[in-house]
Image 1 (cartoon, rainbow, N blue to C red):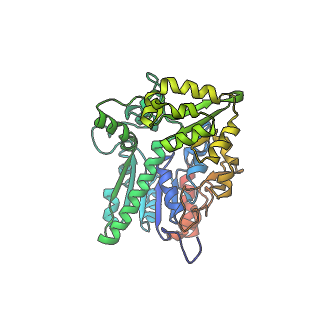
Image 2: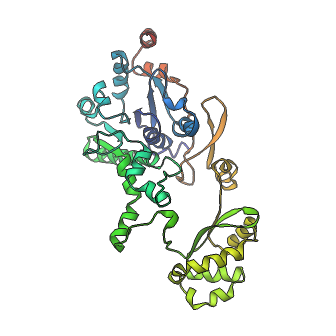
Image 3: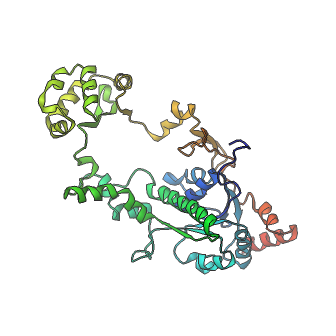
Length: 394
C-alpha cells in the first residue's frame, strides 16, 4: 500500500498471548492489514519455533508482521510489563486454556476495568457451555464435529489434510475483532470476542446437516457420496497419472462429448440432463474412464482449458512453490524460516485496491523487539536490564 492509501488497520495496536496456530492466525491477519502486533512470548519462546514434522512450518507461516517481546509471566515483573503494553493496546488476543489468563490477572474482566475501550479476543476449544472444560485440538473437534466422518471412507474417519479449524478459528477471531472495532466507533466501548474450534467445525459441516434437514437422508462420507454432478472425479490416465475432471452442466456435457468424440453418449436419452447422468454413473463412468485412459494428463488439461471446462492436476504442497500463477500474481513472498534461511510463504488470498497485503516485518526472532517496546512503555536502560536479569534468574 502506498502512503496515500495506508493499510486499513494502521494505528491499531494488538498485544497477543498466543501459540500454535489458532491465536497466531488472528494476529497475522490483523498484522497483514496494518495493525502493530506485539507477540508476548515466554522466555523459552513459542513452542512452534522448535516443532518437528507437520509443525515445522507453523512459526514462519503464522507469525509474520509481528514484533516479539519475551516476558516471564510467572513473575510479577513480567506481568507488570505486559500490563504496561496492554495499557496502550486496542486489542488483546489469547488462546490459552480456560482460566490461565485469569490466574495471571490478564483476563477480560480485569483488563476492561483498566480500559473500557479494550477489545479482548479469546480463542478456545468451545464456546461457554457443557464442553468448555475439555481440552480441544483441531483433530478432536474434527472427530466430534462430523468433519472426519465426512472426509474419510465409511468406517474410517480421517482428519482433513490441514489445520482447517485452527486457521479458520483464528480468522473468525480476527473478523470478530474487526466487528468489535466498528462497534467501538459507535459506542465508545470495547467488548470480549470469543472464537472456538468446535463451533467453527460445526459451521464447516453445516451444509451436510442441512442436506439431512432438506432430504431426510444422512450425508454419506465424501468418498462414497452421491455427487451432485454427473462427472466430478479423479481419473487415472496414461502412464498412471491422475487428474480431476468435472462436467457440471448440460452445456458443458455437450462441449465435453464433442471434444472427445463421444457423440453417441451425447445422443443417449439416458444422459440428457445432469440428473440423468448422476443416476447413470454406475455404467457411464467406466465408459468414460476407458475412453480417456490412454490420453495423458497434459493433453486432457489442454483440451479442458481450451474448452473452458473445469479440471485440475493433482498437485503436492511442495510443488506449489513453483506454481506459475502464484509466482506471477505475487501470491508468494520471501519469508525468514526458523533456522534463518529464506523460503516463500503464501500471502492472504485477497487484494485491496489491486494489491496483496504483504510482509512488512519478517517473523520475529525471539525477543527481537523487547528493548524497544520496553523503552516505549517507559522503562529506562537500568530498568530493562533489571527486568531481563530477573527473568533469566533460575
